[in-house]
Amino acid sequence: MEPLARLGRIGIASLERLGRGHLLLLHIFSGITDLITRPRLLIAQLHSVGVLSMLIITVSGLFVGMVLGLQGFYILSQFGAEETLGVMVAASLVRELGPVVTALLFAGRAGSALTAEIGLMKATEQLSGLEMMAVDPIKRILTPRFMAGLLSMPLLAAIFSAIGVIGGHFVGVGLLGVDEGAYWSQMQAKIDLHEDIYNGVIKSIVFGFVCTWIALFQGHDCVPTSEGVSRATTRTVVHSALAILCLDFVLTALMFGE
Amino acid sequence: MSPQPDDSNEPLVKIRGLRFYRGERAIFDGVDIDIPRRLITAIMGPSGTGKTTLLKLIGGQLRPDAGTVHVDGQDVHKLNNKDLYRLRMRMGMLFQSGALLTDISVFENVAYPLREHTRLPESIIRKLVLMKLEAVGLRGARDLMPSELSGGMARRAALARAIVLDPKMIMYDEPFTGQDPISMGVLVQLIPRLSKASRLTSIVVSHDVAETAGIADIIYVISNGKVIAGGPSEQVANSDSPWVRQFMDGLADGPVPFHFPAPPLEADILENATQPPADAGATL
View 1 (tube, rainbow over the protein chains, first blue to last red):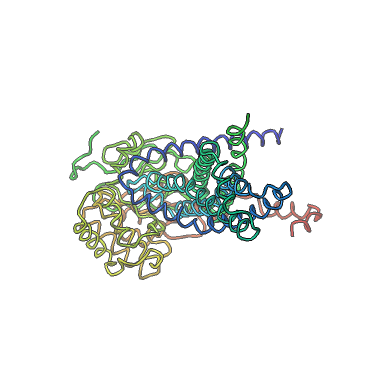
View 2: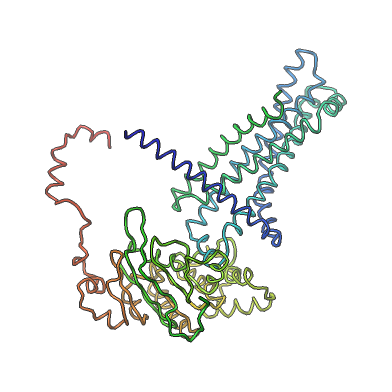
């Protein structure tokens, strides 16, 4: 009986958490109208969530593109199809690696920071303090961060993909001698705006939504102690990574499946 | 009910039959408290009696399981969100940690409620903030960040922020805990001065008997979820109830036992001795 009861307890607790997460999301949405009158709050968060993540995104994008250039060249050259290297690099970046790797890096860099920040604000009674000053902490603190995450992710993914294409060019054309004209013209001919680019953008918007939501919820829902905050931060990264990879499969199946 | 005029003799806060549970444990079990206007009311009790919880119940951050809390004639827990926020603008609260926003300066912290709730021009905000900082003696510290303040200074800065909207009432959560004697002296002086100067209703929640009894007009003592004494401060201070005496005089043993509930010591020791020491290595 005991293990069954424990299983039930875990189930109920998870459902309850899911419910709290959705209520929080609704509350966050209700703050969007307030945000329009205070654009400065959003700009500050775009800076800390988006701009400060750019370095890691750029460097990672460059290296991922360079690796794609190398791997792609060795495989494609076996079929004598080196000039399609540009297509291979761009398609893998725009469709998959751009949105997915950006989201994973985002969860590690910005998501964990968001959770720790909100969790510490809760632990030091700053959220409570705002409430007693008649300021809704969810609308004032969480909503700008949520919108910043949602807006930053597709932009960061676009930067990642663009830098990756340049990295692939550097290795493929610069080092391995693929024809420069072929690299670009094949890419231009084969990469489809709808099929590839729009779908990639949709993916990164979904990931931005989910990652930021998870990060904010974990911070807001954490046990307000140092141990609670550290566990919430870990949970943010783990849950985000799982959510990104599972959702990527679902989205890919929906977009490219027959 | 609409807000009552300031000179009304009705208590500002009226708590009736308040019950609040944390899981199975009753934090409050039928508490009645009246907080009169323009006086300093102290709510005292041993740690863990839910004094902070009481302030959160008054501020509407927590919901009671039964009973009512009326502030200025309004039932706090029946208000909709908008009215609750409007009521909170007339309440200040000083948190134990200060709860200053750590990413903006002392000046901006004090200006925060003004910027949120008023459309005053910058020059007036500046004057108001400087006046409130002057009142707590921190005008010179306005450009410091909260992390650069000592504990006592942070609490004073938070006090300036709590009074910047000129509330009717201010709630102090353990204002004296963890303060050095000088900061403590400053706060002991500051609380009655602010209360007199702005005709504020003050609620001080504390277990520092000497300091709190010295400044309070009315004292309530809470223990085990019930009010065990309440009235004018001299009356409570001279009460001969053994509970109140133990608390006010800081006696180690009395109606509140020194020992946390436990089986007899002999039984506990013998039980451990009869257990095989097989898993002793595993726990090391």
